[in-house]
Length: 147
Image (cartoon, rainbow, N blue to C red):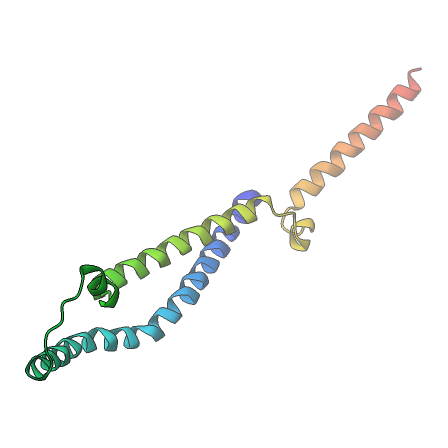
């Protein structure tokens, strides 16, 4: 019965630790979400500005030929909002799973703490051990008498 109670307590504690880990990992994401949203919305306005600049630049500057490698170097990579959200979500899930496994394994191999050394919750065990010792003592005395 005692081991079941310990198992329930350790699972409850592991659940609480996992919840704290998830909250700790998700807090920076909640803070960064408005900044990410602003950068995604700004992407459309940047396209509009670049189109206007191209139209204005086409009238005044002569065209120059550029190699494909120069275009690749000068172009900016773009990420869609869905991709970033999926990657961040996967990272949170992965880190949460790693934290859960670490906590679970650490609890299994951890030495007994101060609370586990005290037999407050198991009086039956103490009584059984006392009776066993008394029987062993009586048996030793009986063997001494029968020599």
